[in-house]
Length: 475
Image 1 (cartoon, rainbow, N blue to C red):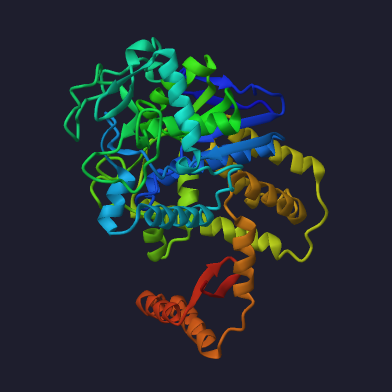
Image 2 (image 1 turned 90 degrees about the vertical axis):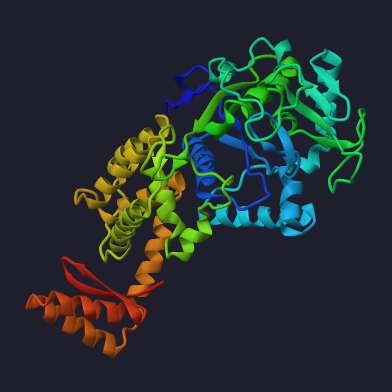
């Protein structure tokens, strides 16, 4: 099937042509594990997961890499200055930086499992690739792309790279030096960035290594170039990340990589837009208050409801988060699961209709293969589940394909729902349900709502269907 993706570099929709036929390699910028991952960050990781699933369903052999940043990410993303976020996190929590990295890595992995993200082919940590980062910096030193600021570090001279900023149309004027910290006046250009930082002389860092230039630690940007080259080779198909990374982090990756690998280093750049709040501001950790997946779960939301919410948007468009929007997504997901449970419970499912299967398979996969139009795919799924022209056996096979493609765990959730429906219902709950039905028949809505609340408080749910009332044990 023809695959189309929007390429940030060319700023247009392109047919995907792999470097090696039948194979695709891509790199995704992972989390900096100094704090919890917020739900805005998670949107870019769902994008990477959807890409992998789409390529697999199209028959590709996929090798994808997502890093863990556990050193070198400085507090100012705007001009690559300030404290190392990992060291700052350790000071905040009065723990070792290694303990902080492990704790928040484990939290991220739990979020990934809750969102049903496929395990990447490789998940390297920056601290495991220090030698490769030093070697890469040395190559840039030898090629004349760097300079040293005494007492500070080795910096990349962006004036030496003519194509700097090409990823965002050469728009480097928006980079405001010292937006959050005091600008380093020793830099030759505001856009120059640290490749290797020297350890301070007045204190010992928890993470530091020997290098040809002195004891220190790598800058944030160099890790992604070093790890991607080590695991994917000098050229690969796709690089993903949030749109906030395109202007500086990814521009810096290109600048430090292409003098060594040659251009183009990456064939397709794919970025997800921001998740924003009601005011239009992006989700961010800088305020110290941000939403995590655990907060959503503690409010009773299935992580699949959040994934469903993301899929109802498009990765290139900003998505506004609200509790009302999440509740609507949760209801939409529950309705889809209920339809699947009815299909699984069909006593006479019939046999697989190959023509119908192929038609719906093509329609749904085609939507996702066309620049990840997941909302269009979900509309098709809803149509499929409702249509009586497709028998249950065919729908069951298609739902398994949809689960592989969209990762919504429809089959798993539907089986759990069927199991809860088959639990013996206590007589007192049945009596309350009957009383509620009688109250509704006499239009005593207040009493019907009061009884529903009693049933809910007892750990059960009543669901009105076209076939009557169903009583279900809550999960």
